[in-house]
Length: 230
Image (cartoon, rainbow, N blue to C red; front, side):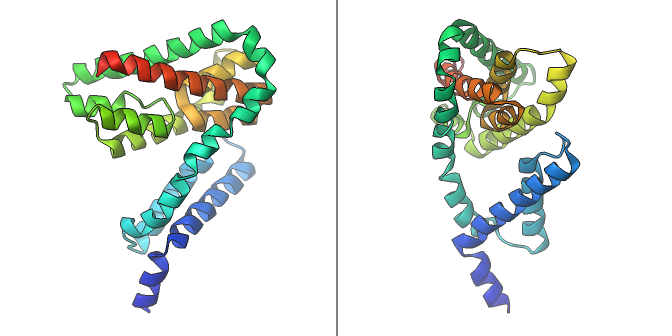
């Protein structure tokens, strides 16, 4: 029985299936409770960890399927181009404020991380790991690796940043009375990358398109700014 269980969990399909099932459970729970706190990605992460711990499944087994899912991260990010294309005229009319909004977001994110790391005496490796926390995972991983950071820490911080942004966004939009959908989308994309963009798409097509645009612009700006901080 143990051998059969090991064979099942060591198959790449196990990791893929676990990701799909846990995320589907998160989506269903989110729709039922209708609360931004019940984020599907957060629920999926928690359930996945619980399954691995309860059944004592080695992380290496899960990674065989998890790597397959991760492979689609790049294409999924590129697919955001569709919503951007639909709002191309809006982008042309508002390019300068969108660009300046992304620049402000990148400077604030990276600047605050850099200053706090120096304040608390963190070494250069951890600083390099945390600096790209607000951009999408493929860019963040590459920046972290090139700067001598710890890539797993970078990935964890990117996930945490994205989830916090997606959870807090609806509340912050109401608290600060953000009426402009362009401003809401740019703020989400610049602060919490692809996860924030998924929440922006739920808020509206304009918000989603602007978030996708700011995600891309913020990624480019972060690469340039990292040259001066690492």
